[in-house]
Image 1: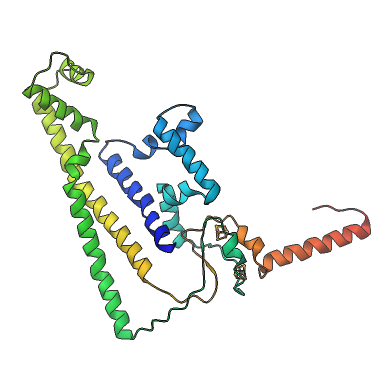
Image 2: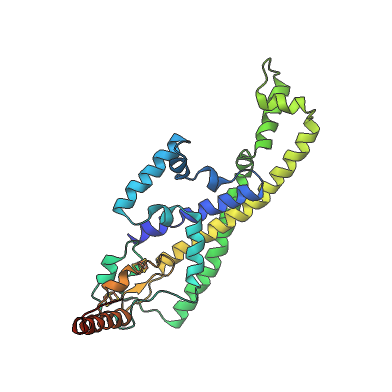
Length: 282
Ligand code: SF4
Ligand code: SF4
């Protein structure tokens, strides 16, 4: 359904924003670490990720490109730029609503005709837009606050913060057998003062960047909810630019597609000439 696809469409954005957050705080490269297909190509790796990759491949039998549509952060960026692309895919200006393209599209990127029966006055329209203008900053603030509250926990993804926790724990209850990380830390002459300064800087960075990432997540959710609530009248089947992967499958299904009609008639004409002249070349 439209709502389910919209909710699933939020996942790549959340993934992308967390990936950027952990990259700018020099904590980890999330996208490389959790690539579900890399283990398959390398014939080894995290078994959980390999199973996940295989499940995604199996899911692709039933629904088009599930990883690209519902997980891949690069897909999220592409969908953003596709909306403002100069060259957009279009099937035909003379749609007869035969639905053939809609059935053919492998990624459900064709919007069906819709008649918006709710007629609103100019004042109601202005009120609705004002409501959106209030709603979006509220969502951004809520998202920013939630992730700021989680900043300390999130900072534990950084190996220096984890090392700091181990050092503090060891100072409180000294261990006979030190883990290898602590051994390396003390072996290199590390001190609590020095690591405390480093970790304070990392945690302060996490507070700032988590707030920004949270605000952007709030905006993504806000825009998705607004997108679900806006009902625009559409007379014909239209391509959703953000979802379309330009596979061109719908073009050949459309009985109204002029360029294909021309190509077909040119092909038939060429073939007829070839039959008369006894030779055929493309
Ligand atoms: S070009 Fe491919 S992905 Fe885009 S609307 Fe047509 S069939 Fe769907
Ligand atoms: S196949 Fe062509 S005519 Fe039929 S619904 Fe799609 S765009 Fe319209």
